Image 1: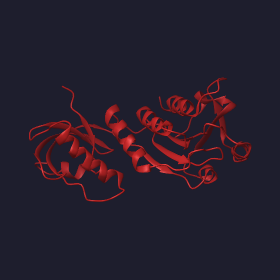
Image 2: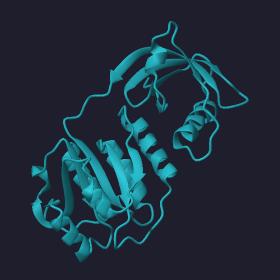
Image 3: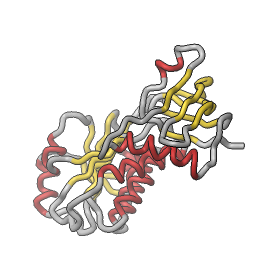
Image 4: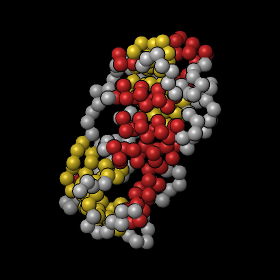
Length: 247
C-alpha cells in the first residue's frame, strides 16, 4: 500500500541523529505563515481525513530529504503529534539546470493552475510580476504556496518551489541572480535550444507583452524564444515552456 507523503517545512536531519529519532510535531502558532498553517492543516488531515491513530505510517519530506515515519501520539485536543523517524528514503538530486518562472499575474484560477502544473514539472521557483496588460492586480501568496506544497506532496518531488513577487518587471530583468533570461514571444529562437544553469523564463499576461516591454527585453539582452507558430494562451505557454526547459 502506497504511503501518503506530507511536507513538513522544517529540517529533519538533526532529529535523525538521535536514537530513537523522535519528532515532536508542534506547529508554532502564527498568522499569515504558509508553512505554519500548512503544518497545522497536515495534522488536521491526519485526524479528520485519514483517521490516523498511533501506529500509522507516513512519509515526511522537508525540501532536502524524504523520511519514513510512524505516528506514536496524535493529540485529540490540538494540532500536535509525536512521530518516530525511520530511514531516509531519498535525498534531493542536484539539478544540472534550475528553471525559474517569471509569471505575469493571470485572471481567474489560471495562476493557480500554472503554479500547480509548474510545480509538478519541476520548476525551482515562481515569481509573480505585474506587467502592462495584467488585468488582475493582487494575489494571495499564502494560498499559492499551499497549492505548490500540495502539488509537491502529490507528484513525489522532495523540494517545494517558493512563490514570491517582484517589485517590477524591470528589476527582475536587471537581476544578476540568473545566468540566462528568456522571454516567450512570437518570432524568437526555438525554446528547445535554450540552456543555462539558472534560467529565468518570462511569461506574459493574456493580452501579451506591450511594445514598451518588448523593447525593454530587447535592449537588455533577454533572449526571445518560442515553441512554434501557434498563438498560445498565457497559461498554456507557461506550462509548455516550463516542461520544455525542465524535462
